[in-house]
Image (cartoon, rainbow, N blue to C red; front, side, top):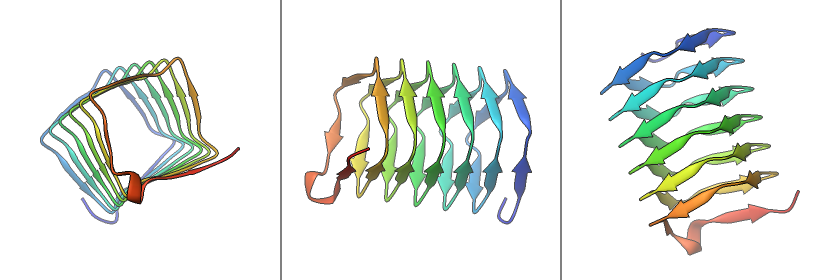
Amino acid sequence: MGGVVFDGVVFDGVAFDGVAFDGVVFDGVVFDGVVFDGVVFDGVAFDGVVFDGVVFDGVVFDGVVFDGVVFDGVVFDGVVFDGVVFDGVAFDGVAFDGVAFDGVVFDGVVFDGVVFDGINFRIDKLLFFLV
């Protein structure tokens, strides 16, 4: 799916199972009640995207950039974030369960009402920047 751009699209109640997104750009997209199961995001850019009530189960984010993204009521279960950048991202009422962060950058990120359970941070490769 490389080179594909989704601009202003709304995905409502959609289920993505085992899909691979490679080099895709999501710009101003809304994911509402979407389930991502076993999906791989490789080199994907999320710009101004809203994830509302979304479930990520066994998903891999590799070299992904989240810029100005809102995660509201999202569940991350068994997810891997490798070489991911979170820039100006808001996590509101989000649950991280069994998630691994490796080589991740958090810049201007807000965590509000977030639950971390069974998380693995590679501290030597994790960067936080103050807002």
